[in-house]
Image (tube, rainbow, N blue to C red; front, top):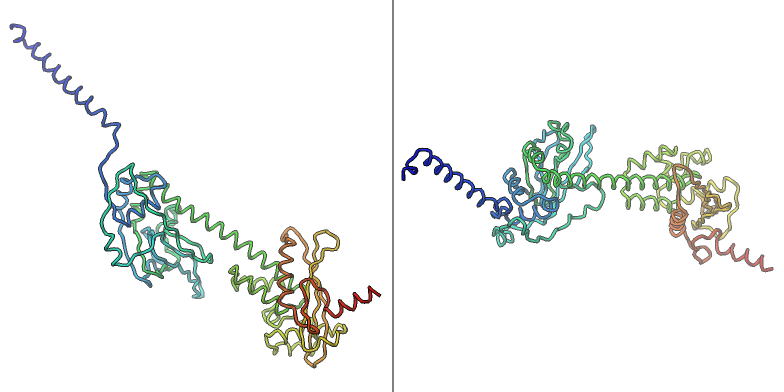
Length: 430
């Protein structure tokens, strides 16, 4: 009993109680270190779709995304709304969730050109349909509900497709504070998310998963841009090759024009590129429109050529006039018609392809004329046309230039009209 009353005994007992309670608390809390935070976070339909489609695939957790949503503001805007004006200092980042927007560039002459197309992944529901689905949904980490991913609308391939407006500043900080070069305007009712640029940059620095999600969108758009540019470069190269072939002999036929026009429309060849190529090949616009180089016309015919229409008969007649000037004699049955045929020939097997063709037509004074021509396509370090491409080119030319001759239609690859072919065959038989 005397020992219990001692001061040192009381101190030891107190210390033991403190150590015991502390150790017990630590041991009891230890399992919590291995348990996930099961606290629920709540998203509405749009937030859930944005999380599932854009952020979750790159490791962003619901809680991290929840923090991102606290930084942003949602907006719904009508068609015609200008999101960004040309020359604005863009201090925010916009992510188009649904709808479509266009970015227009204005050059020094005031001419506007469509640069980018922005498209959201989600369709924007009308207000009635949205009200029926306004109930919030909860989401626990580790138990993500499945939401179908809706693909972007097809832009037609004519312009670059994007979804983030002002995202370049997230990659290149040197763009911060600069004037935005384009005007971005909505073309459909749209819903978009807006983050302050500085706050989103801070979130990306603090959370690598968020950074990975945002940068992946931007890099995917950059990769699409590189792929699109490669396709455009190839199309321009092929168009230049086709143009150089059909202009090689100083004459361009209506069917060749139609072929070039169809290719330009299909592959979005701009008019400026076409004009530059004409200039590089020493052709003027007037010469191209009239189908013949001025240097090939007789002196007295050069002014008259400017008054010809752009129709096939007149141009065929102009081409035939050149042939008559060369002293070639046409068959009499060609009167009133423009008949042509083209075939590719590689005589020596050395990769030098010649397009051989003949044309019969009627000149301005009613005389029948004949024009023969050949155009050479040689593989070199700049252009490597495949035989398939040449055959497709000449096949299209022949199909469009085929005309009735003595009641018959020329076939593809024919080098002479059917009547002459029959006569040649008869002579061989005799």
